[in-house]
Length: 510
Ligand SMILES: Cc1cc2nc3c(=O)[nH]c(=O)nc-3n(C[C@H](O)[C@H](O)[C@H](O)COP(=O)(O)OP(=O)(O)OC[C@H]3O[C@@H](n4cnc5c(N)ncnc54)[C@H](O)[C@@H]3O)c2cc1C
Ligand SMILES: *[C@@H]1O[C@H](CO)[C@@H](O)[C@H](O)[C@H]1NC(C)=O
Ligand SMILES: *[C@@H]1O[C@H](CO)[C@@H](O)[C@H](O)[C@H]1NC(C)=O
Ligand SMILES: *[C@@H]1O[C@H](CO)[C@@H](O)[C@H](O)[C@H]1NC(C)=O
Ligand SMILES: *[C@@H]1O[C@H](CO)[C@@H](O)[C@H](O)[C@H]1NC(C)=O
Image (tube, helix red, strand yellow):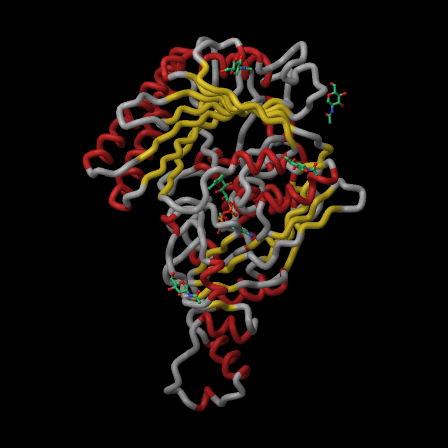
């Protein structure tokens, strides 16, 4: 149904006017219709409530929605979703607003349904489950769980929203042992297009439960609450080590060796990231760094213990600096957060599988990245502006992948294998909007080249991590044809008229 017969009536009734008898009166806008149904919950431009909610991590998401709806309960979310879909209004939903690309969770001419006011965090009395409202941020969750000696499989950056993180996957301190955040959701409470509020878990609406584990938010309904499994958790060991630029190949081969020898089978309490960053001057080469974590200080694999998983890095020459921090998860999150909202950012992603004699292939990835980054840096230099390309590897080893298969599995299509794989992420920050298109198209091309090279050499993996993906990437196709079609069927079942497909703009669809 298009345009606002329902809304017209509704608004007319609300205002006690005989609108129907006066056809010359303009029909109310979608924002007025929602405002009539949910008094006080619609914010318009140039008001404090609108300004406070319309903040995004990335400047590229700065836009001006027609209005922002701030529902305060699941029922109000369902009512809002019903009104925007019945009236054919384009909309999007904001969880924590951390998508980097334009329109990921904002919209220029349309409605934003912001989850800001739904941010309750409740811990069950036996400490086994943490129920989190869809507008909460990870730091709030950590601050609730840390004093209780528990943790959930959640974010590592303070203001990232729980919603987008959990619906796309969720790489956490706990991922080595527990899989992704989405694999540790016990129940999703979801407002559907039909107006119903349902639970999705391993018993009820199992298909929807499977789809929401990695299938992304914008195709099935609006999640209003996540019930998360909690685990006993004390202090976490963390260390950032940086080496000189000549050590890159050694650092990466040590990283892949430790992943193969320890993380793939023996030590699921470790988790590691390898990064290559251009933090220096315009002519300086990139420098390698490793961020390592360990969850159990009494494990024989803990740093300093007999089977120390990270020892290989300690012995590697050419170190420039190392910073070790042993603290609770709240403390780790606060330390990691360095950047706030501000400049322009983009991420692109792919993954590769390790294999026999992978060092040559890994070095070719480094060389390809350096050539790509140099191209961007010269283009930026020619315009007298800065750009900072980075490449990050994160391990996906068998214990993580096995944990993804609990409770019926997730939508990502990953299987355990002889060798671990690595999510490769290409974060780029810059300042000048004139570079936006160039960064998008070249990043996409670089990723396509990398995938072709990996397939060619027998290291192909295919999987694209939604939460690190760029706007031009076909994320859900990377889950495999079977899973893509299954996600389409499930979207169709819960939204038979394809209203979310057509009206919820800007993000990855099956
Ligand atoms: C600084 C920073 C650090 C990060 N760190 C990590 C990390 O450690 N690990 C990791 O895995 N990822 C990380 N990410 C990526 C992050 O997980 C994604 O950007 C994620 O989408 C953010 O969630 P959000 O709710 O803030 O996003 P939003 O931009 O608000 O939402 C993302 C998508 O989900 C939809 N959506 C939002 N709320 C709902 C809802 N309630 N129901 C249905 N759909 C909804 C939106 O419409 C949009 O399509 C980080 C990102 C940044 C910017
Ligand atoms: C809202 O933000 C706009 C644009 O930044 C600003 O001009 C305006 O004064 C703000 N209004 C309020 C009420 O905060
Ligand atoms: C967590 O660690 C921080 C220091 O990083 C400390 O200030 C805080 O008291 C700790 N919280 C708990 C509950 O132990
Ligand atoms: C930590 O490791 C020790 C030694 O292996 C083990 O006994 C203990 O159960 C582990 N703790 C947790 C929380 O896994
Ligand atoms: C950290 O750096 C210091 C000085 O730079 C060095 O002496 C020490 O061995 C390093 N520690 C580790 C664990 O790498």
